[in-house]
Structures are given as structure tokens and as C-alpha cells.
Image (cartoon, rainbow, N blue to C red; front, side, top):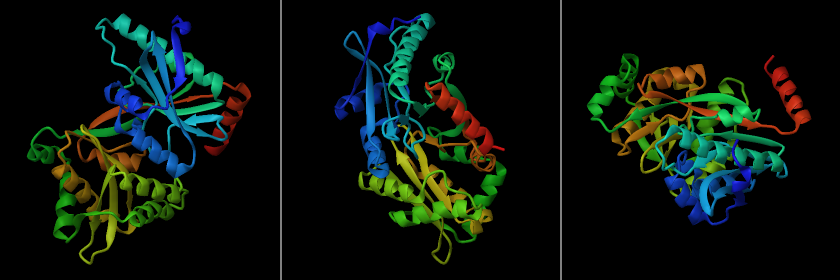
Length: 330
């Protein structure tokens, strides 16, 4: 068992120190950097907190999230695909040493969070593959999936790897006069996002006003590039806001008019961005709903897993939450 007294958990307020740590950390992505976290804070009205785990004066691990419900809950911000735990790269190549270091850091952070929050909901980046400490702590673990494309190869090879059905609908969309163009129309993001769920008569997982505000904030900070597919008469039929980093392009927020579902316009949009981006990787950001997974699978990316973890130290609250989940899923 790790010696938890060897670790000190402190709240980090220095954004430059945090950003440097994220840049070097295992599990660090653009969504854990200060600009994205601050955008989430401005969009939701909930405060962001960042914790550092120190050992012998060295920052060895960290975590960030939104404090919600009066500070009783810590969660990965809505619309951010992952955040969760971050770890300094381990210098040792010995598996025992690596597991020991990671286990101690994770256990120290878990203990701290359980002592300060009633509920914790976090989504890890794909680089965090060992979640046994959460299992052993009694947390709920749920696997999640996304598709990631390698774009270091020639685009002709990328095109050849696409499923035939996807290549065909892209060709059809082009022949039918659909075009892809950049846009800064944030209202259109909100509108297209709403259309997806209104047609299914479902409540969106994130309120459309939050989506709009988050997109506005991200655009003002230069964090996203947005593209839309338009019909021959100039009507927007699909839109995607892409988040960029030095090593990956992420399909962050998307929306589409269900009336144009079978036109191939959305496939054309994704292909044109894949074709033009200089990023070495492309992340479709989620493949967890059957219909969406089927669509994204057509682009022949690698299926990549990641984990959502949920801790609820209060046993009564944990039981209540479980009962509500059972009733909701009936």
C-alpha cells in the first residue's frame, strides 16, 4: 500500500505552472489547459479548480474540474471530452516502479477528493489506461470510445482506407453541389445542435445556451475553427467546431439538419477537414452511440478507449443515485 503521507495535495492557482505541467503530463490534452478550463468556467458559471499532487516538493500528478452544486461535486466540464487525472512521466522503465508511482499518486488524489466532495464525475484522457485504483476504491467505471485517424500518411492513403459507403456518399454530396466553408456563425452552431435532438424529441445532454456561450468564448480565445456544409442554395445543413492542438485536431461540437441526413454533406465536411488539416492526428471525439459510431467508423480510424469514473463517498447518496439511475433506465 502506498504511503499517503508522502504526498501533499494543494490547490493550484498559477496558470503558467499548470499549463506547463499539462504539456508534459501523461493524460494531458488541450482540454486540460487553462484557456479551455477558463472557457468552461465562463460558460457554465461554475468555478474551476486545479489540484496538484506533490511528492518531495515535485509536482507529480494533478486534476482539474468544475465545482458544482455549491462545491459538493467535482466534474469534468460539460462539452470537454476528457480531463481527469494527469501524471508526470515516470522515469523508470521497470513495470513495478511505474505501477507503484502511479498507484500512489492516484490513491492520494482519490483520498483527497473523497474527503472534500460528495460526488466526483471525471472523464480520463485515453492515455490513462490503468483505472484499477478507482475500482479498488469502490468507484464506478465506465468505458468510453472514440475513433482516431493517423494523418501522417499521404491523403490518398487516408482516402483509400475509408469504407466504400463513406467514399460514395462524399462523391455524391460533391456532385449534388454541397460545399464546405469556414464560418464564425456561433448562432448556427446552436441551431444545428438543437436540430439533432428536436427531431428525436430528446433533451440535449448540454443546454443549447451553454453550447452557444462555450463556443463563443472558445472562438474569441482562438481555440476553435468552425466549418459548415452548405447546399447549392447556400443553406447550412451541417456544422462542426474543431478544437486544435499541436498534435491533434478534435471534432469538438457538431450539429446537422436531419432533413439532409442522407445527402452525405456531413461526411463531405469531415473529409474536407481531414484532407486539409496539418495536424498529425484527428479525433472524432466519441463513438458511444450506435448510429454515431456507425457513421464515424466509415472514416476508418483506430478505435480508442478511455474511461469515465464516478466516486460517491456518501453511501446514502450513492444508493439514492443508483436507484434514480435504475428508474431512469426502465
